[in-house]
Structures are given as structure tokens and as C-alpha cells.
Image 1 (tube, one colour):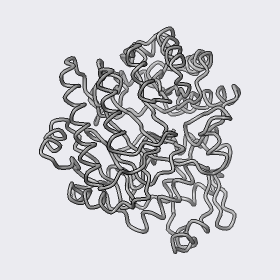
Image 2: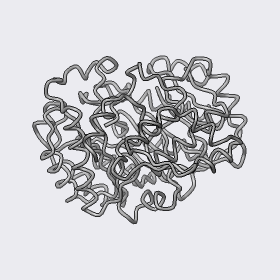
Image 3: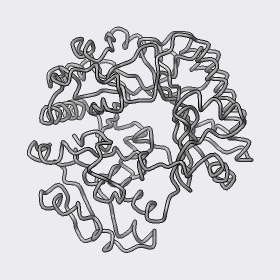
Image 4: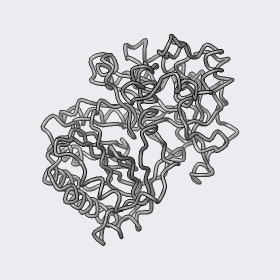
Length: 450
């Protein structure tokens, strides 16, 4: 990474481009009736992925940017699980045929906060309402501090084959500053339980830019993580947005690393993981060379969705739960964010869609360009535009934000082929943003570019 470029572009607030257009552009014009119509229009041959959002935790991590709430009463969690099952059945009924499912992802919050038998019931409902392929990837996000042996057994019996563990940092000073004290021993014990249950696909989530974090503490976290040999890492920069997430106000801004320090931390983590033999995947993922994600990256089939980088090739993502987002060929939909409003809609027998976005032809073209840039650090604009019946020259002309990036050596343009320079790949979001026709730089809606 080049520190001079980090200083120029690193403070800009930009989307992570897990969708295009991004969620701030969703509107109430897309409601339950529109979503129902889109579902009925899905071809019989289509395949889908399922995302289930479980918005509950036992304790709030102060860095968290997710839609979640603290819950002590298990009755609330059980009621929510029943609502999820009702929503799944309602969605399947609206589709009108048993659609094939290739990926299932449980996110949160803490999905494993559910009782083991409730988790098993939820999986059984999905298998009943959809045709979950035997080869389907079934992934669950896990808080190692609360996972039980009974839950691991329920996951095993339900066919879970990938687990994503929140680690963030093993530095006790950082952990106390973000209200997430998690020992290495706890994490190692969970990894051992998962592997004992045959769940070999294990991801670790790490974060840089946290309070009191240093390059040395980042490298120590990497060193200890490598001892547990996960198959993948996700490495994110902390997004400090206390105006949207009030609990982040508990973090002392005076001890947050500045832009240059964040750049150094990200660079140190990336170099350490690559030296350990992991392949860097796009902006923030790392995988073993034989992992499916590394293979997809090598073959040019890597995709990007709301879970980040993925091997999922489905054009349909069905979101279940409060705040969950779905993606269909026609556009995006998002459920009610408030759990009460979400549950009321499902109890009334109607889809819980609160807002969404209907894609235009121009949106689809730009989404393809942005996805290839995010996944491959480059794009053949001529080929992509031709497939959409557009002219690459006109697209380049509209991307005025490209000019300074080219001048600063971040981007190389060879005819209609665009490539992000090797030492500038950490600015891939800045390059993708050049093709974002909806971006409003004046609104501080996103995390920093570095």
C-alpha cells in the first residue's frame, strides 16, 4: 500500500458495494405487493440463496454496526424463530414452486443464540419449503463466547458445513475498549468443537482501526489466529458512525487510530496473511489456495453480495427476518427493521417488505462493472458494455471520478480494459465509486475508504 494515496483517498466515505445501488437508495415505493409479484415471476429453473437474520445478542459489542438488540428472555427468541418459519412458508407459497437452494447463511446478531432444537426446526422448515441441494453451503455466524456443545451438535445434524467466528482482536486492551472480552482459549475450544463435528469450513473475522489498536497488536492477533488454521479470514476496517449507532458513543474517539495508522494496520495484516500462504481475495478476504473462494477468484467467477465475497452464483437471494435484504433479478427488497413491525406483518399473512429498489438497465450495467472491479481489481469495459447493449466510451466519459485516479497511478486504462494498480488495490472502493451514478459524496453514510 502507498501511504501517500491513503492520505489522499483514505478519508473518503464510500460504500462497500455489497450491492448496487446501495441500501440508502432503497425507497418505500417497493413494498409487499411488488415483492410478491417479483416472487411469482421467478422462473422454475432459477436457484436461490437464503439469508436469515437473527437480531439478538446477549451483550452489545460497542463497535457493532449490525441491526441487533440485547435480549435476556429466551421466549422472545423462540417467538422470533416461529415468525421466521412463518415467513419462509409464506415466501415459498408466494413463489408457487419449490425453488432450488444452493446457499444458506445465518447472520446477526448471534444466530446461535437460538435453542438447538429451534435451530433444527428452522432448518427442517427450509428443507420442507425449498429444495435444499445436497451440495448446498450452509453457513452460520458464531460468537465463540456463547456457543454450546448442544448447538454444535444441532448444527452438525442440520448439515451446517461452514462457520464464521467473530474474533476481531485478541488484544485484551482493545477487547475491553470495545466491550468484547474473548480469550484465545475460548476461541480455540470452539474451533476444536466445530472440527470434531465435521464442520471444517471455518472463517475468522478480524477488525483493524479499533480503539488502542496498533500494528503490533494486529500482528499478534494474526499470529494467534494462524495457530488455529482457519480456512478463510475476513478483515474489515472499523466503521465509526455514532450518529447512526448510538452504542458506538461508548468508544473514546481520542484513542481511535487515524487514517495513516489504519492504513498501516491493514497493510500489516494483509502481508502477514499472505506470508502465511493465504490468497488475498478482493478487498478484505483471504483464503487458503485450495479453498473454494480462492479457486473462484483464480477462475474469475467470484461474486459479491450482502455477505461480502462469495462463491454463490445464484441471481436470487431471499432474505428472512427483521431488516433482512433480498435480491431478485428485478431489484432489491428489505424487510421492516423493527422486530415488532416485522412480526406484525408476518402474523397478518403479508410479506414484511418495507422498502426496496427496482433496477434499471443502467443500474444493471453499472452493477456488473462495479462487481468485477471489486472482485477482480479490474474490468473489461468493452465486453461488459457490449453484453448490456451499451458503449464503453460513453461509460468512461460519465466516470469523471476516474481521471484523478488515473493521474495518481491508482488505475491503468488500456483501451477499454481497466485495472487497479497492484500497490493501490486497497483503494478498490474508490475505483468502483467512479461508476456509481447514485453516489452523493456530501452524505457521510458509509465507512472510510481505508
